[in-house]
Length: 214
Ligand code: AP5
Image 1 (cartoon, rainbow, N blue to C red):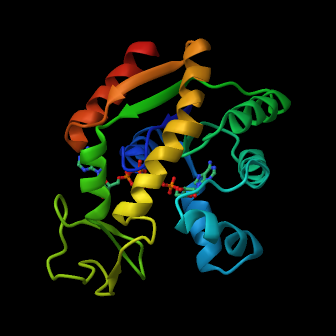
Image 2: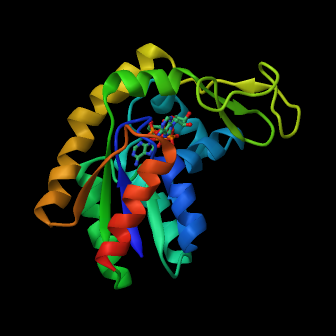
């Protein structure tokens, strides 16, 4: 199974992708996570990407396509792209990489969530500095404020999870990534899912869709 998760910031791409990876044993290729790790490791890629990410802008296409080529060369079986492609140039670049590798895509899932719900979700997100475990002050709060339940380390807020940067991320999504939805709609592999419901309901809609098409 090879699929893409599209959807604005905070639509639940990462949350749902992790559940599907567990259920179907797929590789999870999340460009945002790869870039954040590069920032933590202070690599050249990280130093280059940080200024774009902190402002809610996209990292240049050639950098992203380089990452994807490397990731796909190692991943023999099924995979989920989470947060990629985000521009038409990335979608076209992906077609080229997949055809070189003799692979094709099964589904492109687009998660639909209203802007006010997105802002609410993202400003409430907190992450553990040490183990990376994710909390949400509204839906999954830590037992002790500011402290990770799992390892006792401090929690932090992503620098791009402030209201101003989220607004910009949403505008960038509309301008640069919505055309990618049309690209896959024309190829008849786009499936729209209501991502505004609870975690399990959204997961149920996705697995139902996958089961019906298998
Ligand atoms: P990235 O890390 O991909 O961030 P994003 O797309 O903005 O996505 P998020 O992680 O914020 O949200 P999500 O949709 O995964 O939702 P999640 O499941 O986490 O990218 C960050 C930056 O990296 C970009 O801005 C860009 O600079 C750069 N970048 C990355 N890829 C790139 C690319 N291809 N090209 C160029 N630049 C790139 O959930 C969010 C919150 O909502 C959580 O707290 C969660 O608990 C909660 N939640 C999820 N589902 C539900 C639900 N059903 N009900 C209630 N709460 C929910």
